[in-house]
Image (cartoon, rainbow, N blue to C red; front, top):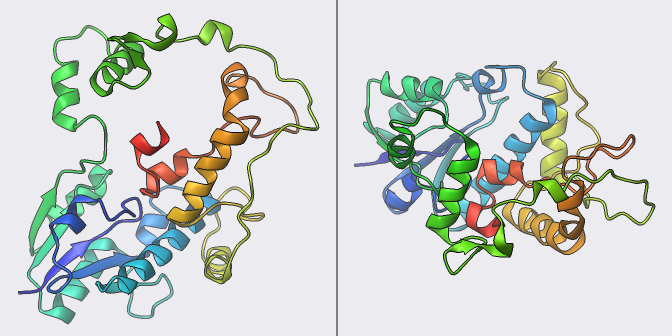
Length: 278
């Protein structure tokens, strides 16, 4: 029996739980660009374009590896424009009655899955260093949920920036030393640009035509696949990380990025994993 394997726009990794549980010879991966997700809140157009372009490239990569992918483009005439509707459409197309899904990051999407008249198996999203149940256990009984204490416990758990059970450098943080003012510097390393390829250009044209949200779409400089995300990570570590600490809270007119990494978008989509960045 065919199963539908839902892959959302922030689950673009082969390590996501639903893909690990799926069988390429049997199952159909469902990916869908829908207006319902692009308009649930007024997203910045660059965010929409980044997600759609990355989805298209990830779907193509899966097909190249032998997966069957049922991909709904935003401008497909049969697109119902909701995740729910596209799962029902694909269920009818492939005579499927079961859906494999990794738990969505939004309650709204999870509720939509639970309301489907299909058998839906929702798997825990285990890409995080801390599972949901683990965090609930950590938070239980505490008078306050302070990030600093959670941060320290995660370092103890993972061993990141730890030496012999103690924080590397002798202190848990060096915020006091990282409050220097940024100064104009013509030699400052700046984030590299990723020139839009034909896939990205097609998406940019689509977003320009379909969305009227705040913010400028162009110039668009983001990487839209794992290869590009890894290149962005390597460039940050080599060029800007040495100055990041001392300038992390600084602001400078005409310098929107300073030494910041600009990697969180890639982590949020699944193009980079948390331990890769750490």
